[in-house]
Length: 165
Image (cartoon, rainbow, N blue to C red; front, side, top):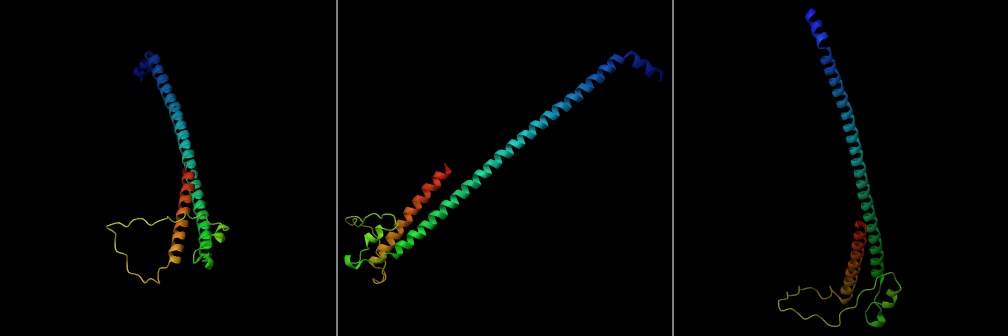
């Protein structure tokens, strides 16, 4: 033990320096680790907040789109029922009464073209049907219903595209 005491006494300044350096190293590691951990936690919180905002935005857009779809669907059903309730006017020879339709909430339907389009040379033959099955009134109702559908789809698309902007 004598030699240990002599070694410690002769080299005490080196040993003390080594202990101070070791303590400084350990303190630096602790301080650096706490700073890195704090920075990591802040970044995780920031990412969580961004993700929550994005999820909320997605939920808001979905809800808005759902409301638009329901509103368009209700209006289409209402207008479709109004269209179905229109009766042919006997005074005009089977044509729908435009004045009665003008007072309703229906959209205006475009007029038919003045003439028929020229037939194509490669046209397909018309399917054979019972003429009583398809009438002008039925064609008129189908055309009006299709026009109404197209108008509502266009309005739905317009409203949906505004929500996404």
